[in-house]
Length: 136
Image (cartoon, rainbow, N blue to C red; front, top):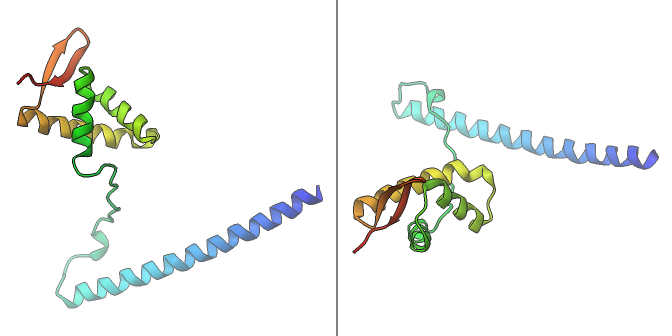
């Protein structure tokens, strides 16, 4: 029981230290926001700066042309739908289901671009809408 108590005390101290660092970082970020708000006001910005939506960083999942080439290679093997293509890409990248919706959206857009370029066509069969390589 003493080992458990000692371990919990140690862990609480570690977490309290992390919390203190995080609060200090949050205070620094808030000070930066206040400074930018003052600079916006000095430059003549009249709207409420707090109404500006926060933005996150763009998650780069694929290199240049990587998604397009991956889709083409998959469709060379067999026709497939959006879901199957996205699932295979996620599995090959070793990612979890947390990126499924994002990858699916990117796959759909990439396929639509390839369809406009004439590289892929829709194939309506008994399994629904499948994509395949266009015959040249």
